[in-house]
Length: 298
Image 1 (tube, one colour):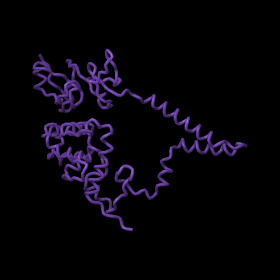
Image 2: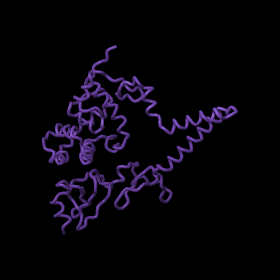
Image 3: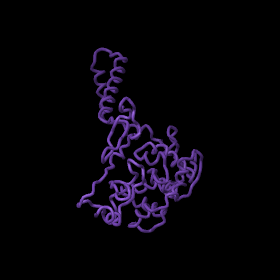
Image 4: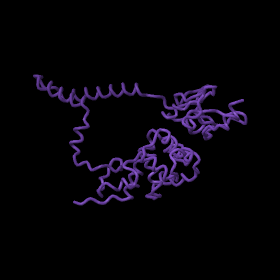
């Protein structure tokens, strides 16, 4: 039976489905709200983390530049309201459309594959079946049983083989209910052990120069204080306020690696990542020689 041809509509549907997954992932702080300013900040983070040649080309086309050296500055100085079209596309529940350049940039932000659109359409005109549980376009699982065999953990295979050997060697029949209860108990023990290893508190609070994990419902004088707390995010734990010294490095390979926010008229505060000030919420800006000379070399 012939397969339907893949079209740009499938690209749009795949990206939409990928967004529903990624907005709860590691970049949820940027994608859940997906405001123009947050989308710009996410572009900067992905650039600083390193782009593939393919993704760098997508960035150059979207930001209308041929220069790899100036790309970061162009992203930083890009007119933020222009990201509104991307926000509207991501947040809309309807089958809305946007430009090919927007779609390809969104594909990079969400790590949707294959990208860009041209590469997506090169899959021999065969439309993969849709994952019914998540609505994500995936390849046709014609060899599903074989894939399941390959993906079965080796430890589980060994456990199954050991159980079979024990059953053959045992001279009496083991009650099936005992086995089920034992396996459930083992699963619960493993789950509780893993949870205790990875568990973290539910909120973050800014303390001095960094975010620290705190309980969301910590009481002060009998009252729950939620004003200074925000939901837990592993990314925010990387933010550090920097106290400048004579040995502080502000630039690397000609690019700023420190960000600042004004604190009154006479001072600035320095941070190690882009984003927003953890207390007042103001956007952080790349440090410049002018700001260093004016505020830090007194």
